[in-house]
Image 1: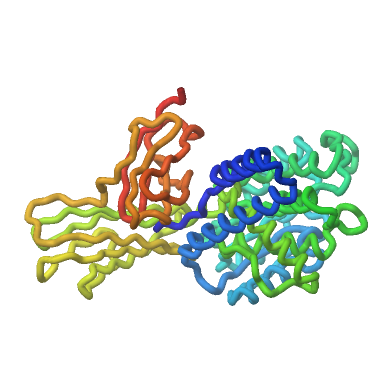
Image 2 (image 1 turned 180 degrees about the vertical axis):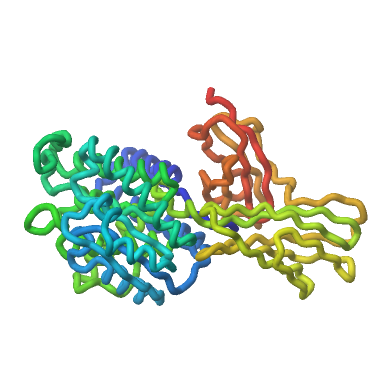
Length: 461
């Protein structure tokens, strides 16, 4: 199964709608609705965790933090490192985080350059000054060009490095944000949410433009603050208190390791029950909308097809590196033999059924695909295209997938024509109906385990 985070947003919304309707009929109180909703979220996160555990990564990673006081407060890099230790991971950290620094400041800073040019960073985390993204002039003329240039610089010295933008949070009470000369200003933000929406837009836009991850710290803050009376700001209503930094660390931890933080023992001295709540909120924000944050945008996807002539097979590799990093290959032909070239040929000594697996790896992550083949069929062309039944084709609003009892509980993955996973979910027994109304018109591929088929998304009725 290729690396992916399950997109459960639609399923969750349908479940919540059902609960609301049921509650209306049975006159359940709001607390009953809330309890059932939280149970559904917990179940969905459990299944997301099962899939994300297929993302194979190193247990030791090196991370460089580039930011300012929003990163240095409460020693955020150390918090992320401690969370990693509690998960059995080793995180090697370094940082440059002078107070008030912009991304453009880092671009021209000798210390930042020295640390970047050391090389061997697996991740570099970029945190912009807290007000600048909300001021259009600086967003488009300072922040975006600086992050673009930093990406080029980082990749020059660290070809395998992945970048993560660290989305910050709004001021506690909003307010207008201006440069020191009051020449350029933001809108007058009426409250925290108003300012946070602007920051969210700024960070997601540049992350999508450059094809890099975004750690949605500010959105996690927003979800917590809208759900409780907890305070995450320090006394200046800008910087984080310890709870706020812990929430930031959780989002960065999961963005780096691609695993949920729920249940980790490290709580930074925060009340354990409250720390667990923060973990759950961070996981829900990141994994329920993982496509919004490009969580797995850079990970490789294993894929191959084959043709056969008697016992001789020619394997054609079609794996994708979404990080533009060179891929390495390990083939296991199921008879004790292996290969490391991209497109091997292999002859089996005897006819029979064999399971062929391909592991593709880039600098950090790997993905595996295994197919069962039958040798001894002279002149028959084979491929990993199957008789998977998906209809109607073309599809407009819904695509139906016919599944058997063995497939129930597994996951479907839908790819666009760029090889990116854009939709996924869990299969039911018999018929699974997939809402594809939000997909653009075009050709797509749906994959279930070893099987896949293509379908056309037509214009909605």
